[in-house]
Length: 297
Image 1 (tube, helix red, strand yellow):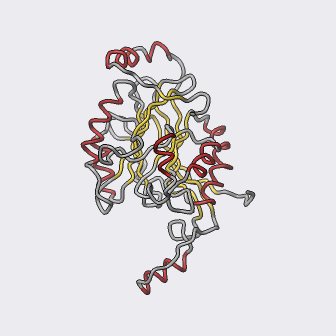
Image 2 (image 1 turned 135 degrees about the horizontal axis):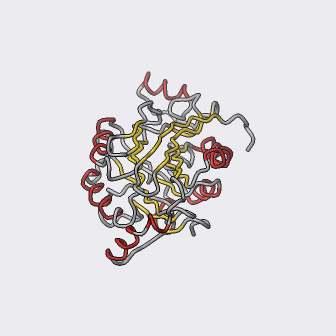
């Protein structure tokens, strides 16, 4: 079950959703902005350790209302399991997204079927277990929607994320205009294009997947915060979180290698976004790259 202070809202009639949406400003006239932390791809045990130790600090420092993280690499660097997910949720993450490594661990099916705080990309074919979006009620704040999408350029082919995004954002906006999008994609052009299409319709679009944090954080004219890639949370004395030498050997020889998760220079990367609680527009976006200074377990 979701932790206290955050729960799923489900409306059975559009009229009910519309009435709720129209009364948000009356119900929450002076609550202040929604402050959100998004954490880039969590890689293995070092990434989970960084979340355990740093999320409580960042919650206090930024007075965060909600923490969202991409957890698709949290189990040994590939995929996610119920145990690794519970560890991340227990550390203070409220909602978890995923991407193309979703199926790397067979235990993920239990998360998809039973855990409402866990998202897989929305644009999987109909009938795929799990959910691609969720609406949560923050303590003392208006509802927040989280949407997970996966790109198609240089990626496994899924349904068109642009078409799915348009339809789902329209549906979510019947309940709330505070909407965060994790776009798990390789091509920068695809990420920017989708974010531009959604400018003014969602609060933020942040990219994941490349594990390289970009320096292009900005707020588009319509009020949508954007960052091409949040980076990754885990060992940065590495090649994208993996031990360096086996990756180099693979490039030199074209022979299979075992890519173990690296260990050193652990960073938690992502972005802190401040969103107007009434109109859903982003006020600020700030990149995060926080180093774990202790090796304590």
